[in-house]
Structure formats: C-alpha cells, structure tokens
Length: 138
Image (cartoon, rainbow, N blue to C red; front, side, top):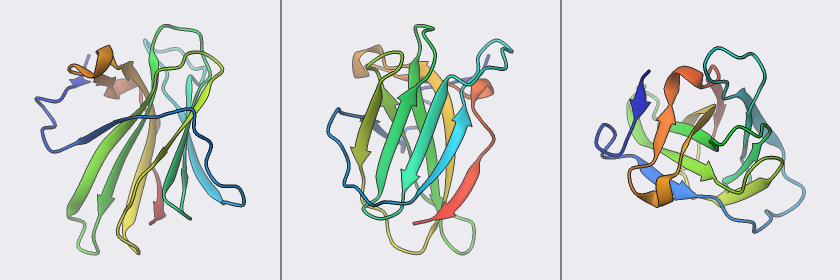
C-alpha cells in the first residue's frame, strides 16, 4: 500500500474543504474514483470549477475514509509549479468546497482519492485507490 504523507510530499498544499457553497454558474471538470482494496465502486467525486478555482468534493461511500481531491498544476514545459490535496471529512453523502487561487492558463490534473485527515496531523492519501488523472486548464 502506497501512502502519501506530509513527509513524502513536503511541498504539497494540504487543505480541508468546508461547508461554504461555491458561486453558481460554474462549469466543472470532475474525476470519480477513490476505490480501496480493489472494490470497483466509486467512493469520491472531485470536481474542479475553473471560474474562481473552486473544488467540490463529495464522499459517496460510507467506508470510514475521507474523500480527497489530489491535484497538480504544471507549466508549459511539464514542470510542477504547485500540488496539493483537499480533504472532505464530513462523511458519507456530504459535499464540501474549497476555494484556491491558481495562475491562469496552466495545466491541472485532478484525481479523486480516499485517505485519512487524521485531524490535520499527517493526513494520508491511499494513492493506489485514486482515479486516473483528468486534465483541464486553470
């Protein structure tokens, strides 16, 4: 089992999504995944809203894990300029939001994952349970 922690991704931005809703009228790019131990049911939906740089993360499985959006922003040369995770710890059936601020016109990859928030102390992501990346621009 491969687990990403703060120690293995020291430059990652780690955020907790909140119940605050995002503005309406936004188009979205979503990834569905976050299965764990080989199950094929989706456990997380992670959506990126380009206008305003909003994340919308839904926990779709009552499994004791947090829903996680794993993201990476790259420049025109493919170099990573920012990366991070946004956790939804509200539980099954709940949607949470996080507003970020990314540079315009960069590529961003989105993966839906499961993990543990651990109260913000060494949060983890089970990367073998993440969806395939979905790509869009900031």
